[in-house]
Amino acid sequence: MTGLKSFLGSCAALCLLAGCGKDDDEKADQASSDTASCPVVVADADCDKSQRPFVFVHGTYGSGDNFAHVAALLGSNGFCQDRIVTIEYNSLGDQPGTNGQLDQAIDKILAETGAIEVDLAGHSQGTRHCGAYLADPAHAAKVAHYINFSGRVAVPNDVETLSLSSEKDLGNMPNHATGSHVTTFTMKNEDHFAVAASSTAFVELYKYLRGEPPKYTEIQCGQDPVIVSGIAETFADNVPLAGRLEISEVGDTPGVPKGNVITVQGAADGVFGPIELKRNVPYEFKGFDVDGTLIGYQYFTPFKRSNRLVRLLSPSKNTVVAQLSTDHIVRGPNHVAITARWAGGAFRQDLGDSLKFDGAEVLTGDNAGAAALAGPNAGGVVGMFFYDVNSDGKSDMNVDFTAPFIDGTDLFLDASSLRFMEVGFDAHDDTADTKRSKVKIPTWPSSDALLLVMFQ
Image 1 (cartoon, helix red, strand yellow):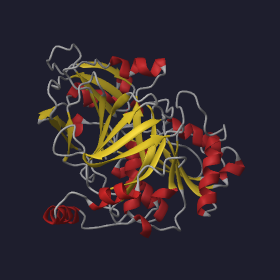
Image 2: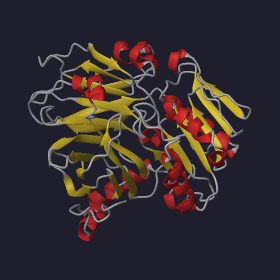
Image 3: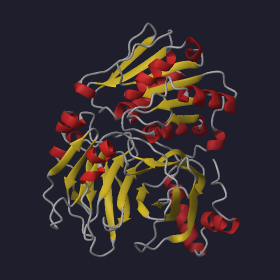
Image 4: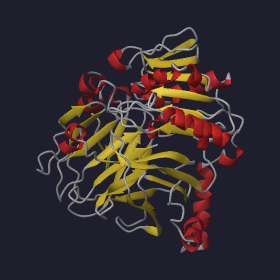
């Protein structure tokens, strides 16, 4: 990473990892609780370095974190997560398959690992870029297998290919690659995003690459501390953001950090980390722009294992993107504006997903039901925006807007006094460990900052 590794002094690091300020009984209770939640530990150091590097190309409005759930599952089954890399590009115009970006990334990871081939994957628009890349025989020679996540691409140069899609994919129909060496698998209920992000997609990918089912179909704990790194960037066009990042444990009092605050001064490429954080502990990521203005807060369900594909997203300055998304958000001093995401797929009320704020259900047939697989957000709702549309202190739960993969719902979340709000998510995927996840978030007024919660 360029210029960010010296973010923490040695004393602060020791306090962060050792839990300064706790008495022995409290430390013992925390250790006991963490051990109980981690009956299995698959440490990064024990990964199988004979495995080929894996390169992922996201789709429209996507980013590298679209593969984070599957990457964690691969890591839980012995894949080296530092060998899983993603191509970050502006999906509104960049052509990474032909402009040299994808080839440079593949050459870089091959040089770093000493491997002679990679396994390449593309999702949605990313399949088109992968197809363009593979059209060059010299490029195809660097790829052992290609994974096509939902894209009607003709795979050139006889590259061994697994094509994954779903009966509920775009157009409510499968979208598969074609070619003489293409194996297809059609899932049943996975939305367009889940085609590349779900546990089912992981299982099929793993079986294809390894020739046997995975040992674990849920994310297993990694070593403690976990390693977290990623990029701060804008939504959809993925413009890197410099600035400052403050990371702290979510404490017992809203707005009051627990323990030491990790401060990272960002570089122009937006990259941050690697950072050591406590395993299974909730953290707050607080972002500032280069002028020191608060951008927003991002919360994750606790990291069970290392995550090198974290994306801290901010509103885009691209007029078209903003008009389709964050321009709709109404901000004010008395209500919260929050975006919810799930790393394993879209929110699917029609399949039994439940998202609750302080115990009140916020998923409906209109904002996350079967209708979400048609119309403007035919791929399913991946990002759900909640805010008080009329600033009237009432929740009518009407859908305020829809756009590709996102929508906004009128929901009043009181921010007149700072308190903790509990956000709970039950996933329809019974194999996903996001089942019955909860996180507590301070009720920051939307006039001050936007909030984002990510269920991993």
